Image (cartoon, rainbow, N blue to C red; front, side, top):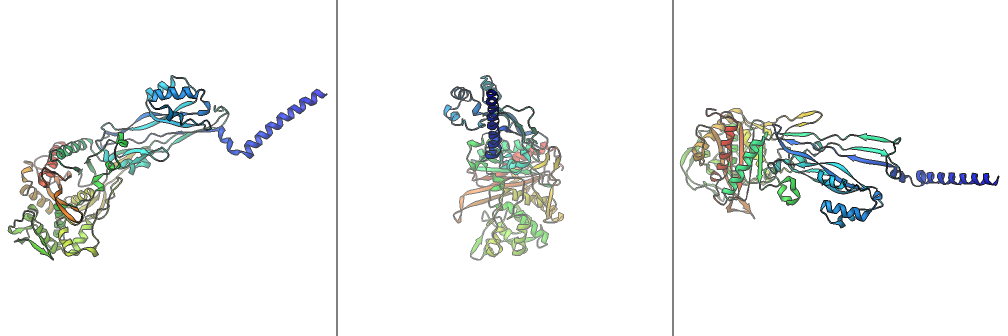
Length: 550
């Protein structure tokens, strides 16, 4: 009987211990239950970025993340030594990551398949791999400021930075999935326990408005031109003037998004949408268009260019201090007469001039689908003096961004429609989202636009750039040369040279803006930016198969 009692007491003791442990786990320390529920994140594939024809610009490659399960590592010293040799990193950096109180730690990301296979061949316990998608750029920096790059947030997760990677980060990133399962004390899945899998949702692909062939042409010609004219930096934007779909955008210097971490943050700034500059004479067609549309001047209106014009205490001269007497508004545009522009501005009146500046989109974002756009800078009406209105007529005393300038100029030659510029044509995933051209407002009439196209053709054929015209092809355009304001005054030795042009005049298929900052070979837009534009235009005429009679 005593043996039976002893056995009974033994069973009761064991049962009490089990009950106490269950009570401790479920009531006193409920958080310990997490040790028996393993959750593993599944990474989605980030959406690809391709050009309008489906040609790859940003792709993905499969890499791997190495993780440790410290409690399962049999020989810590041996593990650290072997892994450090394969990954070519210091033993101390790996050893510092091993915390035996933790169930899981990330060791190294972006491992190649050969590195993964080498580690698996060690046949060591306490480690595993996650699949990771990493960005791959087949053409390196062909469109760095357009695409942006993928960096890391504070938690070490991928996040889009700059360009479309930043603007469309949510759409590109997709949604992560997970595997949740019950595990035993050794971390092994319990077959009859909870087994839940939620598959990741891959990101949507972006089809850009960019034509990769045109992008390559623009970048190569811009880079060669900047070297030829010994310029500090430059930008070129080409677009469809009827929709403002961007065909190419390149700013130099740029960076390699594959190795973005090797570059200073300033390299990521997209000058085409973020930098503000005084447009100079490229602004003149906007003011003339507004005046013609208001009915206060015509293309053949004659005024007397008999010398400098006084505005208060200031004297405004022509750029070469030469005067031709009675000339038409068209000829004033051809010779880029600042005196002629003051005449046009006076006819238009300060109120309408100021209003037209904003109607063309200055002082406000275009809302292009890229990160980092600036507003430009236009003085408040209460801060405008007579001299400010006068200089505004020839593009000084106000600041614009390149994207504002080409958008406004497109309205001058596309029938008067201000369009919202955009770089993504569609988003494609489970469903396709097509981006449509977006009309903002009618700035001038179609009749005025037709007149302006002929005036800009005459400016091209009779002005400073007539030596560049392409025989048999009608290209319209306007040069600009603006001094750079420094510490309250203009530095005559430093200029921003620009040219904006379009072709053909009859049926414009493209518009392009080229900006060259601080060229040393020549300060004039007609001798730096314009030649770069025409190098590109020659290629586009062939690419678009534009006939000589168009």
